[in-house]
Length: 408
Image (cartoon, rainbow, N blue to C red; front, side):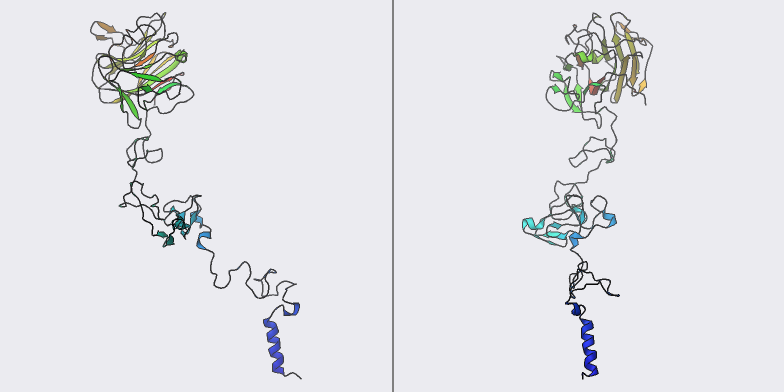
């Protein structure tokens, strides 16, 4: 007879070894109170969906990002570092090391280890970099480390940000008023970027050439890149654009930015013109002796159109534009305001009669465009001889095949 104490001891031993009666394999699911075990758990080992004793939490770099880290990874938005895929990771492993949203650094690649979210043995470098960019060791370049902070406040978009970059829309810069892009109605556009004697048409179709050495590229209207600087010189220096059938427009517009170096003076600014009216479609924008603008459009059968402005002082950028042909007449705008002075302007022995309308376009002639001088004395089809060189700056010259809205 087995003693009662022995029976109790054997019962306790069996209870402590679940599954011993069926060779260690559970066949009928976990008993009540054992809901954490699964059929895949053998013996008394750990469940597969629970960490083993001493294993702790998953590795830091495999921790899913918190809700706040689901947004694009960036400085100040991640306590660790940002991967090339834009994911925020803990930044404590040798292959993904960094903090405060810096770019992750592979310390192991250079034989280093990650200590305190920084590659031990790595020398940070911030010279020539923008602040808040990576220092190359897992940290961020901060003020005082030799980095540069871009500043686009009170600057025009397109200007230098102070760190060798360019101020872009959204960086706090002001959007420039000058024309900077072409559209489907642009026939030619000159922004005077580049170098050398070639003047590039942004449409790629009607490139011009700088003739002479006095005309040069300088800084233009703020945010508008370069401008052409013309000066009174002999021989006259100017920009010539060869004739093209694309310029024979029955309707359209011409606009540009100008800045005068003198308060007065008879000067040619831009024209596709010639002496006489053998051919129609002659167009000129010029400055008269009293400092007023004159836009003149000639046709071989109609009276010539003349629109004039008030005198415009030197030292300020003006947006000058004309619409011609189509369903409208001949219109001159200065800074988006229609202008049509009707009083005669007398310059020496010449009387300019202002305020005359015309409804034709600039089609019918084969003259080149000349920027920087008068072509009123030129032969048909030639820029020579020129007269009255322009003393000032010209920027963003655009010819369009439609009448544009220039009013605010």
